[in-house]
Length: 447
Image (cartoon, rainbow, N blue to C red; front, side, top):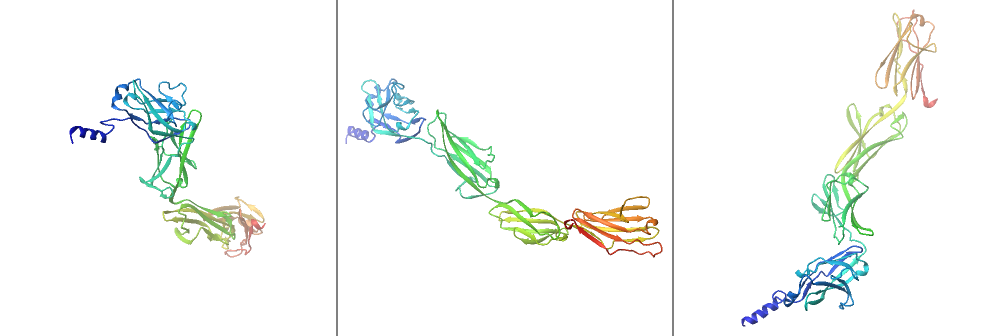
């Protein structure tokens, strides 16, 4: 095989490089948004003999659906605005074999197959009928894609995120030609403040936050917006975040009330927000500085209360991620009770003592011969608070008051009244305490 034959074979194998032919490089299909633009990436080749005819004055022609350029010309770069089926511009340099073209304000009737033709000086006039580009004009933009990343690893949307994890939501969008370019925005339902660390670049928007119970079941939506001349067109994608967390907002409610009259029934109800749901509720109460465990379950009921049921009660809600407590004070109220130790004694003067216990804290007063007694030259009254529910009062009587008088101790609070008659010792009797066994209690509820 001689040298000439080798050259011919080599040129045949590398056709378009050593022995160039007419050829064009176009995408097979391009989508365009109705009312927006489309950019057709385009490069072409010509036979080497026509290189001298490809000058700055060369023009490009596009026609649609048929090969008859005289009947189906839709764009001519030499007359881009006159009688054109479509507005556009060849933004590539034809002299450099770059036929990249932009068409504007596309509508549905612009959909179809497009062919390119180059016309230069002399005999350079070539229609590239073997390759074409399909322009598909769509009415709505494609949805963006939202992905969930936990600790920089992608997870499926239905997977649950552990509270405290670093979460990133990434929104990415395939963009279509538009001026101005489309934008991405975030929103959430229910509405929560979105992290300022969100960034927007090249139509990839990252929303970053640390997962808390506040994001559980929150739906995040990413919206792509195209601002067109006559309207805005949008599309969106959403993802609902599921967060696992320890009990939150644990609370104890009391029915009918945390303050009630002894003998009433009462129910304590514990509630909490947790994911997964609370596994156990545990009740305890403070007893002499220690916590006494009572029972498990979300309710605690006393069918008939008495003063010993009063105090602080604690509910502990727990799941596999932790626990949380809530407390309530149970206030058992009762009519005052006057102690049987209340009595009178005589030395040089007559001194009487009266002790009462009640909730709310009771008051004590003295009645002499049916009339209230206050401090005077013949009487002296003092009080001592024994506890939050107990009170002690003493009265000192002048001798002249002890012969014909009757003394009564009366205690009352908002729940009722109790009274007791005290027998006064006479001056001729020996010194010992006297007490009338008549101790009467009256509940306000029974009046």
